[in-house]
Image (cartoon, rainbow, N blue to C red):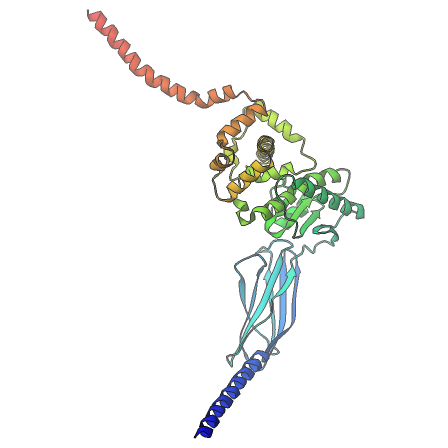
Length: 405
């Protein structure tokens, strides 16, 4: 009896083990029944991307999908593929109509389902969507990488030196994270840069940063002005990238005047025309209120230039009065979601309107009494009219009464 129970238990255990192994073997065979090989992705920048692969399958293919996205995107593009008789799949993505960021990393993979019910997801593959219209040279130092296509070795090394110096200056403005690489791509003309960024029509743009990607673009032609342009553009755009790394995704909550003002302060060669623009605007009472520069800058080139000049001067005024720690409080107040107007109250105990007025008076020498008078004059006029009407009526009534007497 006891022996029988032992034999039955042993038999059940043996049967369970066989079924477990059999099931595992079927699973392994199912996984081994599909294989994706000869995976390739090539591109012509701004025109198209060619994806191709070979699917090796033990039974007919029911469905095959190509899935891809920019590495930092949440939403993927899903493309249904038609396999040929040998299992080859191909797809051409129209990059002229469906734009992708230049130099972004693209991640892609394949999903396959067979008529037998087996399915397979390939490993993820990566490639960089480079601007391969040009042959790029590269020089790097730690996590700073400079890329250029026009100019000699000295040009590239000068750009790298400028990036190092800019990094040192930016560290004086806010905490800096240098653990991730920063790629700096230098185009030889504004048109070539704007074609890459698809920014046609804004010819005054000579630099751009994609902070989340850690990529900087600058238009710097080799020549006599190259050093000045490097000192102006490279440090400015690096500040955008590093400020994004400091506050993360809340970077976009910071006012535009603070983003651009901080980046302009990082420039190794500040634009001398900023001061002229400020003086002219002050004389003509044409300064833009800082509160109007919280969410956007003007699109017009001359007005945008004044906005940059104001943002730079105003941010410099704040640093001079409240220091590194005070500005760090301001940056974090905005990153925490406070509005443009209340952020300064939280960090400094002063309203943005007051700081704007004090900056104009103490830095630009504006006649704030005249400014204040022009601001309140319409209200003063209205109040005067409101008082004069009943006063006039009273005087008229008094005169009328006196004449009757």
